[in-house]
Amino acid sequence: MSEKITFVPGPGKCVPWEIKVEELGEIPGNEETVKKHWENLDAFAYGFIWFWVQR
Image (cartoon, rainbow, N blue to C red):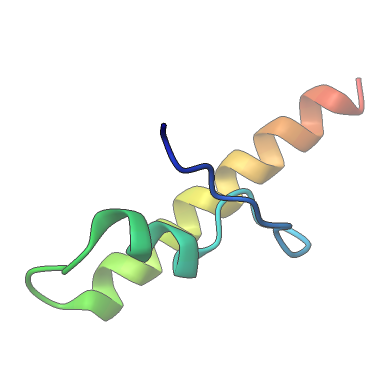
């Protein structure tokens, strides 16, 4: 049976970095760069969803 991850994201987040890094495992290269880009992409996704929900 597959394991289901349950979490409550904070404000302005869809999938927090802590959950994503657990899913991905070891990050080759500079983890801070990957984290920065993930958080930017996640914030964009949150904004996009918020925009369509508020219409």
